[in-house]
Image 1 (cartoon, helix red, strand yellow):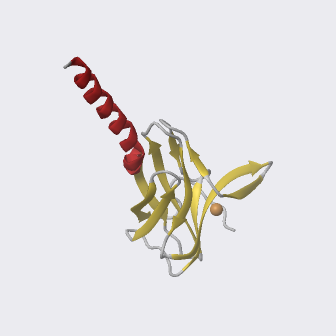
Image 2 (image 1 turned 90 degrees about the vertical axis):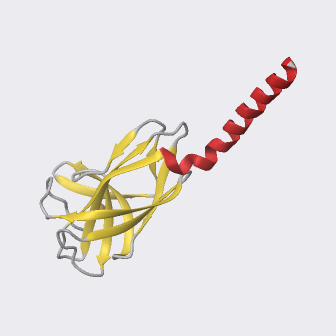
Length: 152
Ligand SMILES: [Cu+2]
């Protein structure tokens, strides 16, 4: 009697543990996605990523139909010169929030197929190492919102 109860409990735990990676897609919370209005060939998108899961994850790719190429960039000041660096992987440690915002991390939209006007929706597919693909839509806001962004 007792042993079968223990066995059931053990099985439940084992199954719960086994199922965890399969639900990893729900452990990334994407909030406040927006893109900068742009009349040039280059655009930028920003958002906040929260890893609510137990395991570390990483953003490894971003895709979008609005531009020829999409890259994950970081921006740093090298003396008085603003430098952008392409990241192959943006680490999202378990339990942490990573914010992409003007002046720092951003999603670079290279060779836009057309201008991004205020109010437009920019579809983005975020690809995570563990959580897989998450499709979102970034709303275009006026250029100048939240500070400047150096061009390429
Ligand atoms: Cu950039």
